[in-house]
Image (tube, rainbow, N blue to C red; front, side, top):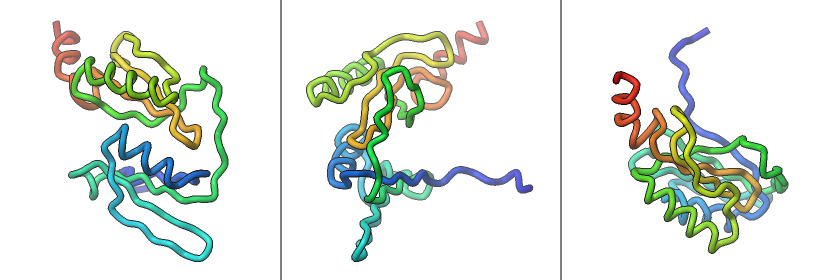
Length: 145
């Protein structure tokens, strides 16, 4: 087995392609980098600017709503550059009616985060201070005393 494997994409079937594309554009800053249409399906590749060769979401129409309960914590995680940025996303999500987890602080390594529901029912976390992304250095310094 190869130890050099790395994750490159996540593929999701969605019920409303346009709504999901808009959600990931508006809340995550992603953009469509490839799209193709056939007589039976639309497939959109989305990525964060500058990360098009690193990691993408592949959205395919023809899915079902997930209907996850509020206490189901499976999610996609996006790092933000400050606690204030988490608060802004949460306020935007509350106005849009898609906030599921209000901003909260958790011990390391979780940090400060909130959670949204995308139009297909997937949960999307926005965090600051996790060991992956902005704010990680501050927590690393705390660990080292």
